[in-house]
Every structure is written in structure tokens, then in C-alpha cells.
Image (tube, rainbow, N blue to C red; front, side):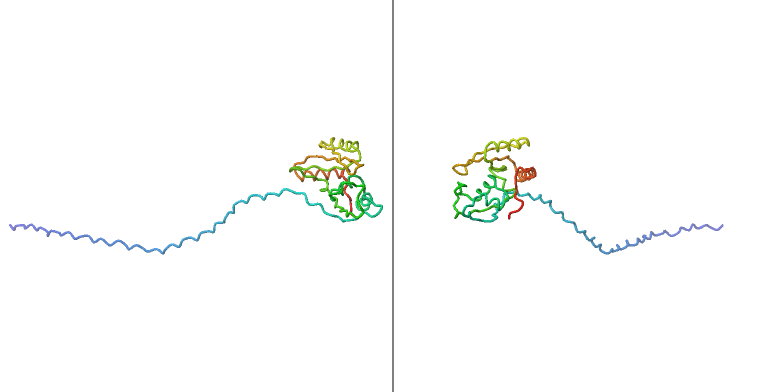
Length: 203
């Protein structure tokens, strides 16, 4: 009987697995930085401009004149302002310091005639303002006008003032007012009410 020969297969040798190399990294194009949007500059808020307080302007001269022989302040006031009364004389004398006797002004004295405006009636003292209402020949006339102003809620003051050795007249003022604008408003009211007279035209 034939013998069976066991055939042992050849031992298989392990073949190392071939590992493919990792793929090379793909170089990407460098990214361009996004352009920055211009940032609008915000200006710091400015403090509101402070309004300068109003101030009284210097009185303006209308004209100068001399008292001709036989003439007086009365004739100058009538000719240039259309009205002659103690208030007009007082405004003229305020522009002519040194005249203390309205009845004894020499003919050679040059008289300054001021431009009369609403501000001519505003007086400043210690940061507050008062209004020159007018000058009266008698205290009774001044008190009568003051009573009208008191009815409007205005404080008044009457002060005696000598204009000549024979003439003592009475100045009436109203106030006080905290600002020049308040005083101007009050003067305009008194003008409309006929309490203060402003010449319409200087001729």
C-alpha cells in the first residue's frame, strides 16, 4: 500500500504592509486682510457759547449849539426835540456836565444835544438797572405819575434836584431791574403807554 506523504506548505513570511506617505499639505494662498472701514470721528460736543451780558452804550451826540442872545434851553429843546419840559432839560444837562444853573447859561457856552433813545432813560448802579421816568416841576406831579406806576407793580423813587437857585425839580425813577434787557422791555412799555416820550425825529 502506498504511503501518504504529508506535505507541509512552506511557512509564509509576513510581508510588511506598505503605508502610503501622508498627502503633502496643500498650500493655500495667503489671505489678504480685509480693508478696514474708516471710522467716523466723533467730535466732542462743544459747550454752548455763553451770551455776553448786554451793556449800555455810550450816549451819542446829535449836534452842538450855542445859546444865541435871548434864547434858552426851551428854544433849543423845541427846535431839536419837538418838546420842551423839565425831562428834556434834564436829559440835555446830563450831556453837559458843569451846568448847574439852567437860567444862567452864558451865550458862549457850547451845548451838546444828545440823541434821545430808549436807553437814555436807563440807569445802571451796582449791577442792577433803574428807569428814569421823568423830571417834574412839583413833587405833586411826580407823585401823581408814581401812583400810576405803583398800580403797574413798579417800585418808584422821587428825588429833589436843584437846577438853579430858584428851581428845585423832582426826578422820578422806577425799578430796579435785574438785567438790561428787562429794563429795555419796561422802557418800551412805558413808551407805548405815553409815560416816556421819545422824539420821533431829530431835526
